[in-house]
Image 1 (cartoon, protein in one colour):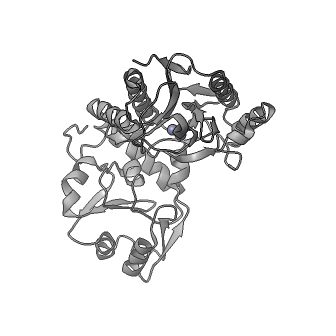
Image 2 (cartoon, rainbow, N blue to C red):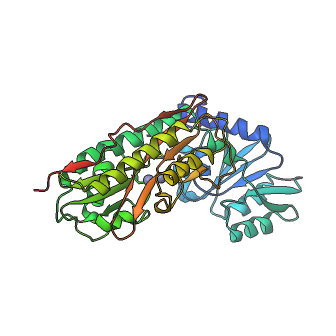
Length: 374
Ligand code: ZN
Ligand code: ZN
């Protein structure tokens, strides 16, 4: 929410103080001037939530460039450490005209997010300087979440859990997956979410065996599971949450034992998490357990991923990951087992990596909720 503070009232807004500190941390590690053109980095660094703008950062200066469509928004949102340049022109031409990078032979753009056409346009405008795509120095900074970011994720997750508790009784024979998803989205938007953090997954019966199925026209039938993998953006930050509801009172023994194995896997995965270990470790622990149980072939993905301004960010909790876990990382722990054509179970919690282990942020019962069909 905007507070009505004017630009230049330095330090008045907590969000601006956070941005000033981030800018200082970035400038301390910059080896050459940097241009940022993509969300969510513009939001993380400057506070700008619009879609068109550019941030230019050198070791001693910072500018935010946009056009008149976003001028008011930029004046309101962008931290006062950034000099605002607003003109009816392309950002690279505004920057070239202002000679921001005068005397700099090399300028970097973020290779992960900058498209080739944008890179070429900046290169042409800033010539004879060369504009080079380089690994973004913001990425390592964003991996470790600050207090304000963790608080925002907690708010997003609390709303998601509230919505899950609210929607569960609506799981009845005849209701479509799409209707359940639409109701969830309406509920969360009415309660302050800006939108879902991905295409909500409401997967009933055999659809629950598809890890990335979406909510479709299928109607829920009696005596089948419905998998909800849902998340919402609150204050810019995403939640990610999965539970399974059974439409009926007597789940088959095979489904219950699959659920028990996934829950045990999740516990083992969480117990394996702590700062200072390879991010591949917890997934390897879960794989070993599934192998022991002779169900490894039903586990078709990895254990989890970082969440923040984006639904999928670093680190990956995957056996393929080469990163290390650090205190302050926010990750999901979401093992799943899937029997194609029949059903699947996935349970997903969010945890904060700590020095000793992890703090589980999700506070929702894991059991297979049984809804008497009426
Ligand atoms: Zn999820
Ligand atoms: Zn996830």
